[in-house]
Length: 323
Image (cartoon, rainbow, N blue to C red):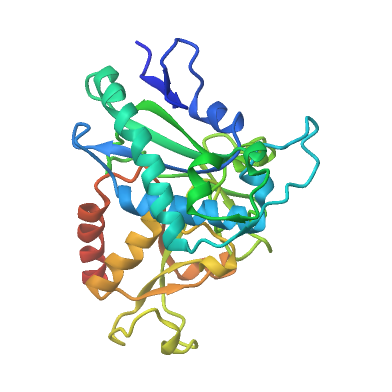
């Protein structure tokens, strides 16, 4: 039985048998995107408000620094640089406009997708915001009045059966294959195409590819954030921690900082918040493979993390007992 696949774009729902996979959907469209999923039998969207804020931030970053990643190219060759009007809008304005634009589409499309999903499925939901370069003509400063006329929303729904966590053999297998992303602080669809050469280097049985600019300091996965639980290096100053922690703790959690060139993942931020709330030492630092003898374990996070708030609290409560 074929899993649910539905695309909603420009007010039109497509659920034909040839509806593309999410990977093809993203390769066919240029823009900023985010992916989440439903939870509890489709009753809610996981961390929806956080995803909307990150989507708005990605769109704004691309608009100001890399518009060719946000707008469809004005030429068939795709080589002509796109020049956008200056933006007079603050991040809060982008968040407001993106939220309005996306929620209007979701209010139409989500009930249809939920009705069509199979028994036992949740829905993976990918929302893409893209710009229409032709509609920028005559705009000198991009403001809220221009926003709705310039940007479009497309949504891809697909069936998803949540993983069973804690079962032997379901852990991730990682391999280091390439350098970090450009404009890493934004999530954009072109990365699906750009990472294809890396995918060709994937060894058998490996489930995720790690990125590093120097072959030692590990930044993130190609579609995940990367964390390490390791013994503290006592030679480093305590004031580098994200929070003041009891010196008796012999372990800390590490993840690369956004400034090193990693995506500000929604689940990444939740891990940081849970660590802080539970008093677990955490530091934004790219873990070094050359010091992996200090590692106790490593884990990755992504949109498919299930019931993270509960699982993480149980997991980190266990870590507190260890340290």
